[in-house]
Image (cartoon, rainbow over all chains, first blue to last red):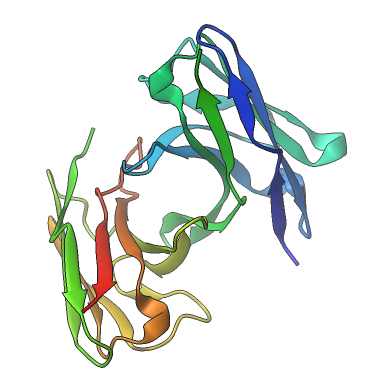
Length: 121
Length: 107
């Protein structure tokens, strides 16, 4: 069955970087894009960016441009999201999600379990 | 970016009630509107895509409608497992933005 398993919770100091992994299984990794979405406490879901797992192309939200880097390791069927220059407002649960085309639209049909990143001095 | 606004932000309802949640887009998104359900401590789960198409395995008490800028999610008879937060998301253009969520609580 399809699974996306993320790395564990992280505690970071302001100004540091964090790298979250998303290991996939149960399907052909290079067939579907992986998106990253975060959810700060009490806030709405917020799209950060995505990676074409086939060719490695990426696109990022303007909000995070310059601070976020999404990569993938096809041999490990794993995607990564690195966020730098962390500040307290980056405290959130970070999710990876598989992007699938359904008829004429795209949806997130499988999600990772989420990784809590806490930024605190 | 397209702004998505849900109403209400929260509601209290009883088992068996009919519940309706609305979602409004800041500009036309045709029918590119998805609904997700999120329970505490869990990732979102896809319920409905393209405004009215039910995701496989989702109970038929969930339905969606709308096009353009106004959409609704209806739960015909609320069940105990339906108490959760519901998010709409537009997939018409990037970035795919979400509504602020509607929390459905037990009355």
